[in-house]
Amino acid sequence: MSQKEHLPALPWDHLPAPGKRTRPPESPRRKAPQGRRVWDRTSVPDDPDGWISHQLSVQGPAPTLRSFEEAARGPGLIPWVFDTQRQEEDLFALLARVPVAQRGLSVRECHALARQLAQSAARARAQDMARRADGLSCPLDLNRLLPVPHALLEAGETDPKALAWLRQHWGVASSLRRVTRRNNSGHHPAAAKGQGRAEWSFYSLGGSPDAAIIHCQQRWRDLTFTLTLAPVI
Image (tube, rainbow, N blue to C red; front, side, top):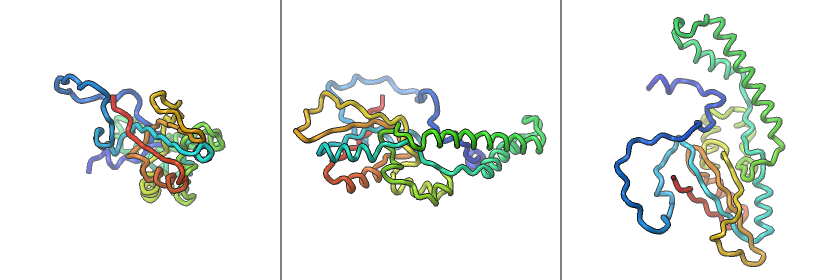
């Protein structure tokens, strides 16, 4: 097992990496065929450790669709309980494994720095949670549709049981990111009287939220849910 696999997670490790992805060198591209390409799940390779772009379309009776949209709107976060002591221990382990000549800190100074970083992260986390907990800025919040049990929230986001629950009930490893309620595309036919259509785009981590969509389909049986992978540019 490599050294990297032993490193504990940091509070910001769950965020998407900034910048554009780099791609390995490719052979010269052949001329693309004419016409629009049909995208499906087989057109994009599995990327269990990366963020995957999706589009969700929901259509059906307008009152039922409004009910779903109201239920789905929330702050867009999972209110994990932040374990300051465990985070301090993890940060100290990261600092202490660096050779003394390179880190320039004594063991006592490593403990002090780890404590300061953990407390700072806890304050920032608490402020963010308090600011967003009652918000409705996310139009598709999986935790509003299928809440994470409180016992698992206390266990923390790195707990194996919590991660297993997310994958079983949501199909992903984290809350959705960059969720956008899209305007209905012009290429779709006009909805029949009394019917409605809504579309969302978002990114998910570690897979597709198929399990959550199945739950929604069972709860709102009059609606039709269509989840697709977004084209990779």
